[in-house]
Amino acid sequence: MPIAETYHLALLGLLVVVVTLVIQMMVAAISKAKQSGAVPGKMDSALSHASFVFRANRTFANSVDNTPALLGAALLAIVAGAGANWVGIWVWVYALARISHMALYYGIATEKNPSPRTHFFFLGLIATIALLIQAGLALASTGS
Image 1: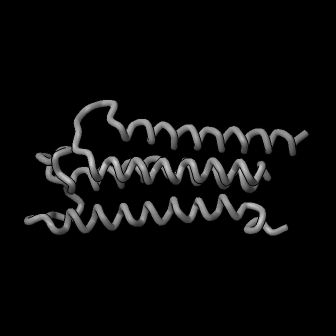
Image 2: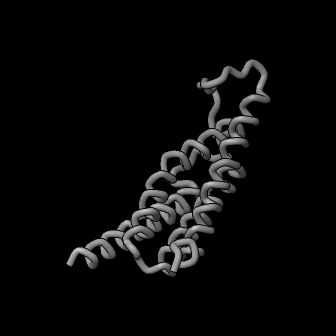
């Protein structure tokens, strides 16, 4: 059975993750470019959570920090032949956690730590760790 068929749920989830990242990139770039005196590659150091431009850029940066680990873990799990349903579930948990994180970061201007978005950051981290465990178990079972 082809990988695309076996891991259809996971691959759809990965598509959502990548599309979300592209949307975040566009929102960050457009919101920053609309600022008067915007300089490419430089964020005004006076900006903080009260600024949507700041929050949009932090949302994108946070996803850039977290998504490579998820993509690597999912790829390892798929190539190792981990259980397709669980790989799909964990990828979707991550995708929905990142979308929730994004919505909260865009909508809530808070300096509070932890903020409501922190819970979704950790949910995404748990999904990534679960995929790594699945990949490791699948690799261990093929090596014996």
